[in-house]
Length: 625
Image 1 (cartoon, rainbow, N blue to C red):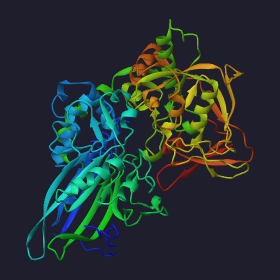
Image 2 (image 1 turned 90 degrees about the horizontal axis):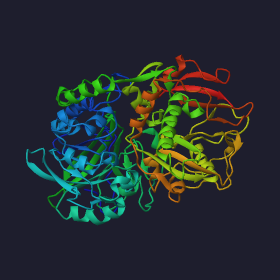
Image 3 (image 1 turned 180 degrees about the vertical axis):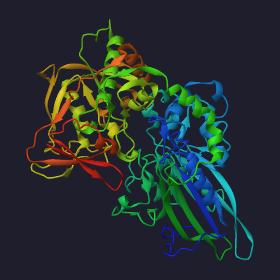
Image 4 (image 1 turned 90 degrees about the vertical axis):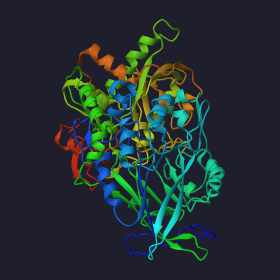
């Protein structure tokens, strides 16, 4: 265990010996998001980047040896792809064990934490799915208002073998946490559950887990790493959690990042090379089965006859394309895989032009425009005959598949021609519902200011300045259809990515117009958006909490998109963008996009130029402002 005076693990030698009988190996996955097979359903082709079936081969290889091992998952395994949506909406062949649970059972997981997306299809569905798991599902900071709570902790028993062949019992306590915002992101959950502060819960429950006589406490935190200072209801609390007494090892997740790794260097309290947060061994294993977290803890006898960790080694091991698909997993999901392929092939209509998100961050995204048109169409229908029917209806949506942490293949890319359900799922990949709120022109401008915080400040005359703030996720870059505006990059961002005010004097939005007329601060609009935006937390929450909800969690956005395309039969989206950057002569910026964009016609060839591929596999584009 830790030195109780410093609350830190002892240092690891650079030449750590291979694991032996006195070693516990902790293997961890996180954010699988229903990527069970190495197959990209939206592109309709095999993938060499995702899939638990390939991770499974690495798991089996890393289990082999004289060491003891445990296998843990850190949540978000039931939602995240067409197979997950299909299983949630159909019974029949899926009335038995959920394919994700079947795969995890087959691999012999020892415990898992629940993540926020595991609740996307509702609490009853989640209960049915996990009821067949042969391992505990943990959610320590969750309280269910009716029925039994999920387990908060569990104890796993293993044996170590010393050099003399003696077997020594080892008791491992595991506690699981999910983001306290979970019931805010899915408002249907508010009436049935409450998710509490992670750190408060840990302070209360970890001593109780210790009191059960465990030798080690592992925290499964479906939470980003975040800062070291505790804050109320932290979404990204892993670093602060690691600093608490009684927690020995931490598995982080939720943000789909990889730790340890070079991008974390230079941050206080983090050792990005050894893999520690607040001095404790920690790992974050990517998403979709892209990495396997491996933490080796080597024990030594204490003078009092107990065991203490005297060495550790941490790594997030990449699952390489050469790793074979494990039949053990593939067999469990074969029926669901075939059913998913059949459903996705259903034809809906045709598109006269390609629909891709390659240039969404510079204003060119016909697919995003199609989603916004479908939302406006639906809301107008629902408001007919109501007191709000005469108000202008606008529509907000974001490019959910636009690179970032998802990697260079994580872009919407629908070719011209037949539109199938696969293509619509590529355009809109979350099980959100359409909502509509009433807002003023001043609030509309504020909405766009928050969205425009995606971009770095660019000084006039700068050459090849970075355009995008990597801490700002593309799913918060809302584009509003029905109005036009410009973004002045010479001004600083008004907001931080988490919604905190960064500069009260900053204003990037210029020339905001509706039907060619300037938008007045007191002008009234209806904004069609999604149920996720109604949360009382997040980037846009201050603009939602004080406004009247006109349409509350109506139809699924993907269903509305399907009906809209069926009505149109042939989609033809105007090429003109809703917005543009304010001109900055003599200034250029660089941004990342999909490698495929280098071989496609550029939307503004006189201003855009391909630079090449970077070390992460993204195409780099130069834009003249």
